[in-house]
Image (tube, rainbow, N blue to C red; front, top):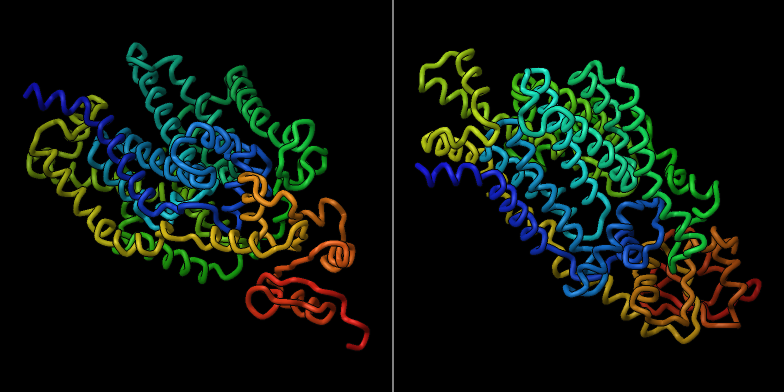
Length: 538
């Protein structure tokens, strides 16, 4: 019995750490080995360089990426380190989810189910395989929820006359201030966290209605948020200005340029007809849930009901947040929008964890012949370390229910792994090696974003081909160089000129205006050299 008690006390920490290790291992198995195209290549570049990324700049991610690129130097090249950072973020989110659900249910086993299930859900698993600011968003969101739940618990201690218990009293305020700082860091990472503002406001009102009358403390929280945002967002003007980085997006060193990047003005208008075709959007959401959760998808609303019964304030927080996020994501038309559902996926797994604990409690109460009221009173007397240690029999029942709930995700994991595995993807690495080898010295390439980012990485991080000028659409806009034909005409005859474009209209324009020599493929959709202007009428 002594050994059982010791294991019970250590179980929460061991469980969270074990799930974090398993989540990291799963991401590491599928991890992208090197540089990539698109935004991944950009983040793999600006992180090690402490540069500035495309809107909204992601300064928290860039700062952390720079730190990771230093700390993780022994493990591989800079691009790999940035990929590994995402695996670490997924592991952090999984471990925090274990602790979050344990705090909500007093069941470590239910926490393990939620943490491991979340990490193996395809969208979450995929985000841990390559450099992506959404991986850090997931980790910070899990931390934010955990701090808010801890604040609620400490506030309840005070209201229940348990002000002398460890961590209560002034400790409740510290948890909320910590949550404010984490929110600021999350906002500096991705503006998606702004969608949580109404939900957090409702939650704070529900937990501590008199909170808003504590003006000095409210002002203190506002100051903590402002200071956090100032610290992280200063990275943009500083690294674009007096401490200029080798790669800068836009002009964030200027007043207008800063807000252009920070507010994501480039993407204004991406929210299309939010109230249109709601039936179709609900259908798409149901399909997404089925693809991510499999047979567990119908249990998600059941889990939310169980959460509303057991933890109504947490249900208010996460239910409203998931609803708002899904509403916006369903109408947002830009890039890989599935990543916007990471928050609702995390929240859904916490509901399923609460449902598992609810099922175990119901079965235990039925077997012991206890009334609901008596069972609730008994559970409130159990220490926060957990209900699973009440008896080996209860732990066995909790394990059986948890395994049944986790079984669909575990059984689908080979299929999920095959879909998200990037461990053998060297397409960007091979393309860059080839492109740098075939382009002549002092060449100019009029490139397109997806190809520009790995070229920037090769040149500015790895130091290859410093003679090459990489002219991206963003470069032309920032430097006022005109359109692609202006750039080509200004350099043609003076230096070797290459193009790679994806817009069919641009490909046709180039074919009609210039004599081209395809290096790869048959036209300027692949790497192509521009030889000369076509003569009029030719």
